[in-house]
Length: 306
Image 1: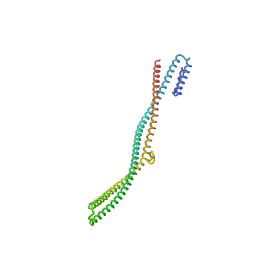
Image 2 (image 1 turned 120 degrees about the horizontal axis):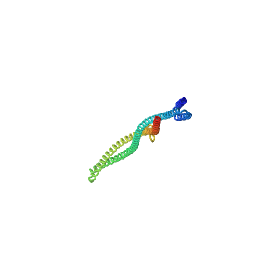
Image 3 (image 1 turned 180 degrees about the vertical axis):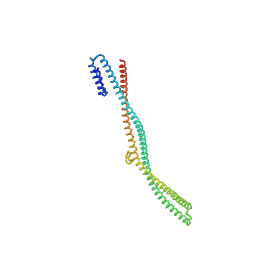
Image 4 (image 1 turned 45 degrees about the horizontal axis):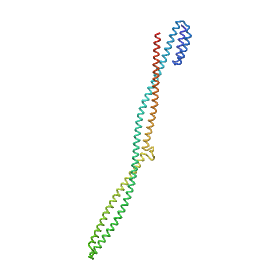
């Protein structure tokens, strides 16, 4: 009896020292088996008591395994819960980053269109300004030519008028001068005066056109200068847009949004893989836990039946 009690006490101490670890429990069980073998020579009543102690030890062993499995399930469940929350947060961040990236891309396209429109405006303004400068020069040349023609017409009209006066005086002295000649000279004088008047109108129209062309040239020059300033504001002085221009700023914003989205996408992918792995580990731990629970229940039933 004392030997059996000593065996129980030794087994209890070994279980405490082992700290419920599986490989140490196996070591304890081997030690206990050795002790039980050495006690096989005990009387029959003592042997029966030893068998009961062995079953109790097996039940304790299974209980410890169930507790360890339960602890593993709790740990894996906590990991899964944490990773699920992390994954949900990353998905929300990723959705926001995707919206920001799309908006940044749309803004970039809008600025690109504005830059192209400004470039077209500058090109058209340049063409219009050059054409108006050329038109102004041509108008000046035309005005000079009309002025020269008018001077010649005025001179011609004066000559014709002098000739008409001379013929009329000669007619008074010489009746042989035909009336038809006098009429023809008078008509020529009238036509010359009309030509001078019409030329003067043409010259005035030319001056008016020249004034309009000059005003248009001034407006076109101002438009061209403003288009250059607008292009500089949008894209700067370098191709692709300087860092301080609107094009450069929006390009930089799109690049940052794209990199931020890629970073969040990578982090979300890593978290998803970690979550899948944790779920698999949790599933294995739950299966093991249920299996050990079933084994413990069966062992308890067998112990009660004996």
